[in-house]
Image (tube, rainbow, N blue to C red; front, side, top):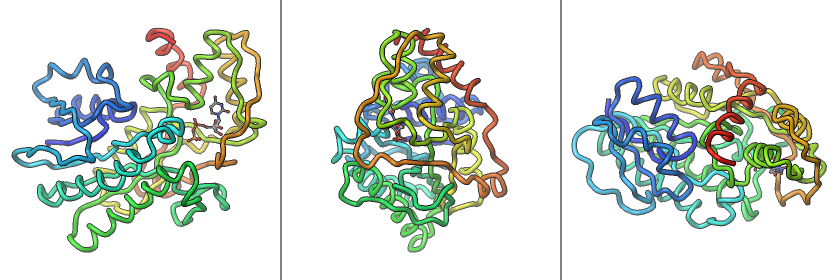
Length: 311
Ligand code: UDP
């Protein structure tokens, strides 16, 4: 198949490119290299089956000839530090960018999968979060450029589906980690790993009692592919339900890196969700998917990658 991946040079996108190239597909990777990195796809650039287009999906994409069978629309900044620095670009990538991709899907009769987010649940009043929960999002808060544009993206997919019959798929991605995360993207796992490897203070925000549930990258990619190739439409949570506090995470990374780092406590960022855990019963039942890589194993692989690739 010919498959277009927006955000294909990013953390998740580049692993998805690898997976689909290995399966023999032709890949068109579209990325403006805003938060993505050419090094993530360097090894694919020589392949005849791989085309890279450096492009910001907010702008009109040049004509792509022939059929496109599937579109994975991942392009968006995804780390809170990044999207708060580029709020307009983030809001537009998930709104105008999604509209452009939906128009392309309509023209090419392609399936389109949109990567929404656990942030769609905001500061959740239900725990764990299942797909039927509508969420509790601050529409004007500092995270709204991301949360609300992802929510709008979901709504736009459903609109194209209902009005034009476009074959759409929505997934809500929970915290994901692994090799190729940017060490400076501000997210908790790259921060803690680089701090521990350099024996610098581990920056705990707030008291570190907020929780997250971390999914290893290979499990996430498997979930994306299973969803794309299913007959499902509506949102499916993809994530690992293994919930833990940020303090517990810090202790584990400190142990695995044998670090001498000490904890330092910083202010909790505004609108930082206090808890987050996916209910993945739907993905289990309807996609036959569940994570297989435990946190300790996934962190070990990620730490090795950070050591090899500079930290
Ligand atoms: N966090 C932290 N120290 C850091 C970076 C993040 O304590 O150096 C906390 C952050 O406040 C949040 C959690 O870790 O509660 C996850 O943050 P991240 O930015 O990775 O992603 P989020 O889940 O908030 O999108």
